[in-house]
Length: 267
Image 1 (tube, rainbow, N blue to C red):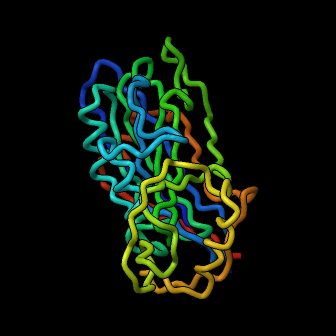
Image 2: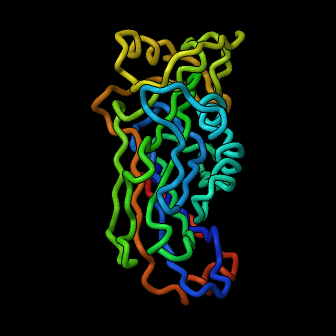
């Protein structure tokens, strides 16, 4: 039985700024059935000045990407973003409590959020990051701060923007040895995590990566689910869809009421 959930929640209210652009962000786990999950997604809209990581380089502890990749903690990357001078806003988009396996995104789950990004002509660029679980330090995100341009320099929306994340777009942070039996996050497997000091690399760039994912088959996650299938390099893992909200007044009335709507489709 496939369950798709759509949730609309307000993450920010307009507060009298000179210009305020409101966007909707839909986050989907596109994997099927008993596949892998991913943690609450950190997102940010900024001036292009925040670079969280670079493929092929050692992960920087100062940006918080290692903490996110190893345990899904978005606090450090949010703090690094606030101190970066990139301006803009950030948020952590968690699956809604009461839906599925909140706060993580289970296979087939979808949630939509509203975010006020301020002036779109300034906060033109979009960044995102999330940990793939269970794993030791797998994550997805954009390694170029200018890769996703939501608005042009005049403040015109470029979207809808659709970001599709395939297996080949996932990264290994290179900070923890890949082992399903050595304290992989969000897994009930026992063991002690083992540090490593490698560079960030694309998943499936190593011959052993498929076997690593397969080693989780039959294991139980922290929320009681059993991993029964894995994904490959060409499988779509996640999708992020961004639209501009054309009628902020009506959205604010909806948000101000503190209303949250959940819809499930069963097939």
